[in-house]
Length: 316
Image 1: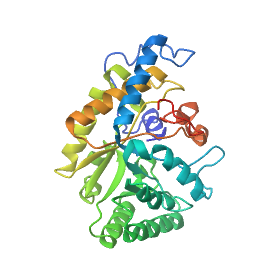
Image 2 (image 1 turned 180 degrees about the vertical axis):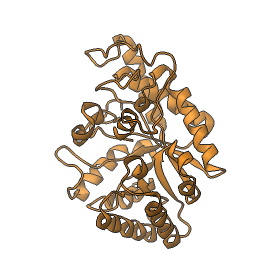
Image 3 (image 1 turned 135 degrees about the horizontal axis):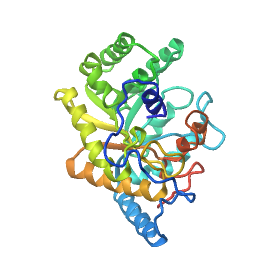
C-alpha cells in the first residue's frame, strides 16, 4: 500500500484510521530513528530478525529496481537476477507488481531459483498500458511460470479504474488461464465495499497496514488481526492472503504510528509469529528499500525493506 491510503483518510475518504488509545499523544519521532531503544535491545532485536529470516519467510514483495532505476524504465534482466539471488535463500514465494518493461523476467528467473510466484499485472488509468499488462500476464501464466496471478493493485483505492472495468479485467484473465488462481490486491476494507470484485476472485489478496492507519506499533498486530477477520468475512469462504504488510524504519510518523528501526523489527517479529501461528500466508513489504518512492510518499516511502536500496542486508 502507498501513501494514497493516508491521503484518502485526510481527504475524507473511506479509509479507516486507528482510533484507539495512544493515537493522538504519541511521542515525537526520535532524531536517530532508533525508536529510543538502547543499543543492547537493538542488537537483540536484529539477532531475532536474522533468525526468523534464516528460517525462511512465506513471501516477500519484490522490486528489481537498483539505484537510479524506477517505474517507466526498462529494467535489465541482470538487475532482476541480482536482486532475486539475494533473497532466494530466505523466502518461498516472491510477489511481483508488473509484467512489462523487464518485469516479465521476474517470474521466469524466480522459478529458476526455486521460488513460487505471485505475479502482478499493474493496472492504472492508461488503458493501452493496461492492455499490455493483461496480455503479458496471460502469456506468462500460459508459459507456466505463474503460481498465482494478481490483476491490479490498489486500483480502487487510487480511483484509476471503476469497478466495472476491473471486473472485466478479472473475468478476461480468469477465462484465459484456467487452473491458475486469480485475485485482486487492495486494502482489506475495500473487499467489504466491493462485493462483486470479491466474488470475482479465486483468492482475496488483502493489504494490511496498521502504520498507514496511524496505529501505534504496540497495538499493530492486534489491529491487523481484525483487518484479516474483516477480509475473511467479506471473502465468504475464499482463501485470504496478506498481500502486503510491513513497518518503515525511518521517515515521518502517521498519527500514532512512528517509524523507527526498533519498531520495524518489533512489528516484523510479532507479525511473522502471529501469521505462522495462525497459518496465514503473508507477504512482507518489502524485500528492498525503494528510493524512487520518495517523490510520491516522502522519505518514509523508501524505508520498508529488509535489504537497503543497494542490496545490502540490514539483518542477514
